[in-house]
Image (cartoon, rainbow, N blue to C red; front, side, top):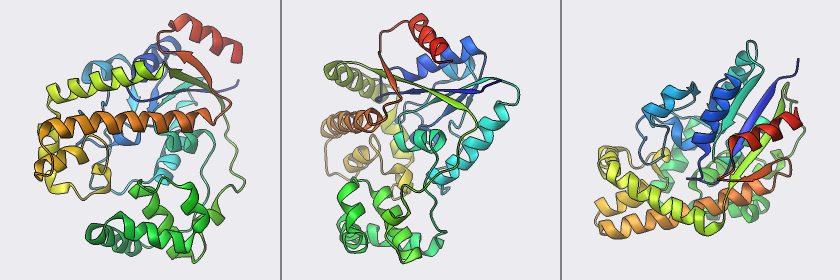
Length: 300
């Protein structure tokens, strides 16, 4: 019998968690999270991780299972997630994969490009350079070592820039030379469901969510993480803006306004990434479960 991975994607704050729980309950199966921000147990409010009530409604894996102090790459996630999904398929025909991190969703559904091992000292050196000189120094290095990838990458994404650089340095070859090689075939079938809305609605939902996060204690959550602010996991929307408030660069109102703005930008990038995948069938965020189940039945 065939095994099906039902993938729920879409921009932040669109309602992916709620839909995935409904699907998991319908198919009596487990949810695997592919949201890279929700892996860390110290970050719950600012990442909008499922709350205790939501976690009770369906079994979730890869939610708050790592510490921000642990190194956890998309490659690590691919290996662990595929192993877990294959294990789940031994007793079930369905697994739900949900998340807003396009690269992590692709890692599971399509597989990642294969890269050489990197000596941790290279990563430490790059992190030190970033701490001392900022992102521009790393961007310049990447421009020299891999001008092709330099043109493609989101240069503001520190993690991506650093990852490309460490591969260039470790291998002596451009990062781009390792991309788009044949990948290992998956043993399951994938059904991709995208949830979206008009841009104004997405932006309104984001603004409301940020307000809720602040009420739920986002500021205190970030304050507790201040000693770790140089860690890569915390170089993310909702945390870096509050760090600037704590450092006296911004007042609180500005920091909250910047969280909203940067989250809206993030949602725009998410949609750009997801829309490149022609296998995804898109539904309005208000669609009822029956319509989505009808589509899944047709795909099966």
